[in-house]
Image 1 (cartoon, rainbow over the protein chains, first blue to last red):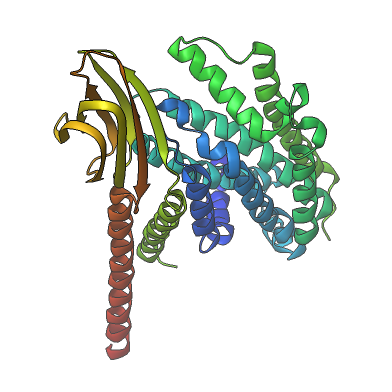
Image 2: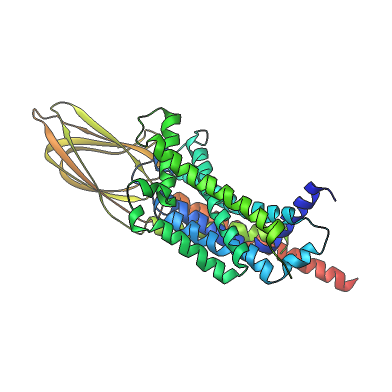
Length: 244
Length: 157
């Protein structure tokens, strides 16, 4: 079987097994709530991330932290990965399909929320700001999914992975040293705002309120860490992980 | 779950999520306050982004003035003259930028204070959620009916 066909079949299987009712519905509910929860007094593209900046990112962290380990650690502990690997399936393709499925579900649901918000804030669908925000959210999903995936593969236990992920994320977000100043750029709550503000400032040609250095950290940390964790997960799953 | 059923459940979920979102967004009736000075024989105007809700507007000024509120399609929804202290209740039909203008006919600069208290849910979100929930339930029912017919056909064959 060709690699592309195998990937497509595994992706479909993954979506049907782990991202169907009620997981998908829960993701949609959380995504809409996380983006639309906080109506600002003013309209306009500047307010597009007003919901995410507060409660939104916490909801996203919670839902990713709970549902992603279900697909990775859960499938290992329930021996479903062993069954799949008993067929002529490559480990790398199996992992890639799982990552793609998780990313697609969160990306789709959160994009739906942003597109709803575009209407609610009276912003045009032809403006660039909503798509900038979707790109910013994608970087954050990549980081959160990457971290959750790596922890799940290391621990191979669904419940432990959820706890470990949430502990790390809450440690990162609510570290007293990171509430303001340089370190705050590493938090997901602030990095969303910094990325969105900087990119829209450049696109709309208004005066910059965010420095290039802050933007570099805000985008570099989640993007590079997310990619590194996914790469490490591939290496670990392909060559190190022992499945009975 | 069959595809039609899945679509129905997703539509229902989006509708239900919008109901919850609508309740959370509009739980607070925190008033919005605005204050502006209007020079003699001049008009001052401010533009606000309003959501389609009901609003109580309280106006107080140091002397009589003329107040005009226009909706996003530029239609006048409030036109009041000789206003010093007044309260109005408006039903905002549309989402968008509302223009509030005050004309000062007197010979001195006057200060106008406005207190806007919004209440009730946003109409358009409520309508969208009702449509989505109804569409979701209808799709689920269609799938159930199709399943029952298929089962009957199979049992009779």
